[in-house]
Amino acid sequence: MFHGVRTVADTQDYLDRMIESQAADPRVVWELAVVETATGRLVGACDLTCESAGEGDLGFILSKDVWGRGYASEAARAMVRAGFDRLGLTRVFATCDVANPASARVLEKAGLTRVATLERHTFALGRWWTSDLYEVRA
Ligand SMILES: CC(C)(COP(=O)(O)OP(=O)(O)OC[C@H]1O[C@@H](n2cnc3c(N)ncnc32)[C@H](O)[C@@H]1OP(=O)(O)O)[C@@H](O)C(=O)NCCC(=O)NCCS
Image (cartoon, rainbow, N blue to C red; front, side):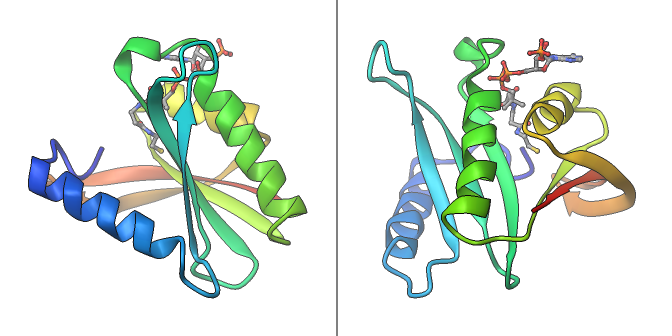
């Protein structure tokens, strides 16, 4: 991920901001925990950030030890459905590093299609990253 490894202080700051975002009106950030049903363990997060009217930016991250079990696909599908049905969005989009085929596959399984490649899209961790842009419209 573009932020690299977080310190304890960074993590606390992130959690504080996420908790605060839950009370915003209108709520823009929907960052939800991904919890493994069988164990009750927190294994990741999936989010929709709705900074432009009617649009949500989809993201997800899973603990490495549970990769490949379909959790990200399940969470992404649920977020897309909730974005359209509950939040009234008309477009869900996501950007994904061109060298991240697992993320691209998750986006495709959630119904998104690649519509563009964004050259040198983000500067992070000391370098430029090129991303693919994915989207699905209601
Ligand atoms: C991307 C990420 C969320 C995927 O999580 P996951 O729970 O393993 O995803 P799923 O099991 O639901 O699905 C992964 C899919 O990618 C496929 N895949 C995994 N590695 C792959 C690779 N190297 N090449 C092609 N496909 C790959 C899997 O086969 C699976 O597809 P399938 O169900 O058709 O077989 C996880 O790797 C992660 O947290 N990465 C770091 C954070 C990140 O990159 N987030 C996305 C930012 S846009």
